[in-house]
Amino acid sequence: MIAEQDDDDDRPEAIARDEVEVRARHESNRMSWNEGAVWYSERVEEDIEFLRAGKSSIHPIERRNIGDLSGWCARAIHLQCASGRDTLSLLNEGAREVVGVDISDRHIENARRTSEALGAPASWHRCDVLDTPHELDGTADLVYTGRGALCWLHDLDAWGGVIARLLKPGGIVHIFDDHPTAWLFDNEAEDLVSSGNNYFTHAESSKGWPDVYIGELAIPEEEQTRKYERLWSLSAIFMALRRAGLVVELFEEYPDRFWRCFDNLKPEHEGKIPITFAMMARKVAGAS
Image (cartoon, rainbow, N blue to C red; front, side, top):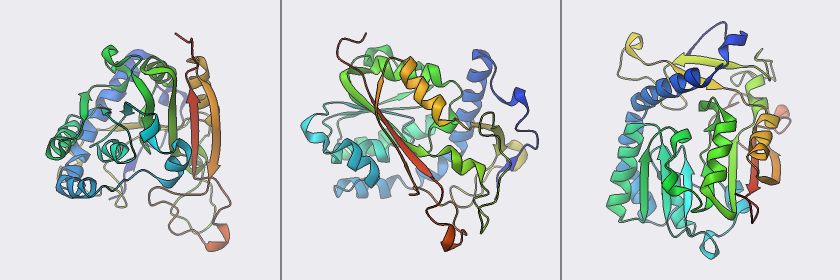
């Protein structure tokens, strides 16, 4: 099932205009993810066995950038943690304790079920990432964001502020996500064909999930919750971190994928556009 997309996504009002609209979109995304997370629930036992075997779903690029966590990461906080597979993988990468935060009730239920089965040193918070509990402030050596996470947020400055307050002085945030350029091309075409999306203003809403990800839901389409996504430019992400007082130490772009996209692209086009990117920023000692 291909997600239904509005035809007027690029109208100026498609971008959330105030905090009320931001919160409304996040709440709609919560309900939509509760529907989609059923797919994850069916894979909890698989996740338990995967993690129990000491395996990790952390991407090789992430591992290269953040290194072995065993020497320095007492607590990693994963924002938008979904059902916790990546969060708990951080333990297998050497973190001593992990905390997961996600807006979806069902995702957090899955994460708790998995960590309890493993006896893992993990705790979970079901809330909008913008409401991450203040009890966690200043406790994170690493703030980690999930792959494919930023598009679901509609206030990056507030997000940057949360990251800054969670980090210990000297702590880092690592982001590895879809490159916004990937939104500008039709990812089902054989050639690099423009999608028509506006790099600076594109936002969209849809129902359903693509077959390459979750696929068709058991819920009739008319009863499915509408979800909202936003293309964030690289400068918007960079400046959100900078305005939060963090110092960006790494920024790289890659042709590497972490999910199925551009599957039909002809070989001669491979590697010609960035599909993913990474940023790493640090909270300097002495910062409030």
